[in-house]
Image (tube, rainbow, N blue to C red; front, side, top):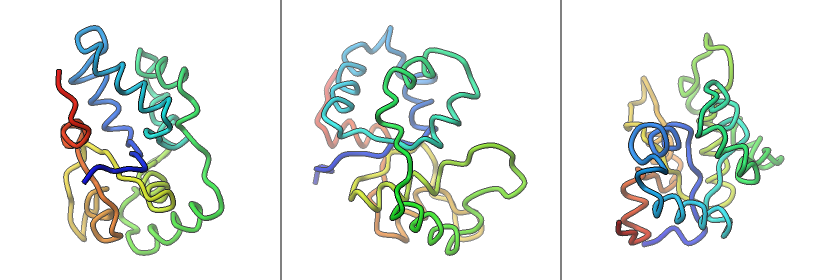
Amino acid sequence: MPSDKGYVIDSCALIDLQRRRYPPDVFPTLWENINLLVTQEKLKSHREVLKELKQNDDELLTWANNHKEIFGDPNEEQQSRVKEILNDFSKLVDSNKMGPQADPFVIARALCEDMAVVTSETEGSAEHPKIPYVCKAKGVKCMSLLEMFRELKWHF
C-alpha cells in the first residue's frame, strides 16, 4: 500500500541517496523523481536533518539548501511527540554526543503527518533502539530507499 501522504526522510537515507549509492550525475532520472516528490510535498524531512547534513559542505548540502522547504521546524504537536518518543526510548539519542540528533524529530514528524519514514538504519533493539525499532513500536510505517522506490513503482 503506497504511503499516500508521503515520506519523511532521515539524514542517513539522504546521504546514501546522494553520496553513496545514487549520485545525480549517474542517476539523473531518479533525482528528477525525488525533486518531483519535493514539489508535490510528498517528501519531507526536518530542520535537524539539515543541521546534520551541514557537517559536510558538498553537493548534498547544496541540494538540501536549494530545497529548504522540506526541512520543517517542529510545531507544538511534533515537539510533544519528540518528548514522548524520548521518554519511551531515551537511548534513541546519545546524551554524550554534541550536535544535532534528528531521529526523534523525523519519527515525530511522520507520526504527526501520517507519513512513512525512509531511513537506511537497521532495526536495532530495546537496548539500542534505531529508527525502525521505534517506528514499529509507535505504529509508523518505516522503509528503506529501495522499498520506497518499489512502493512508488519507479523503474530506471
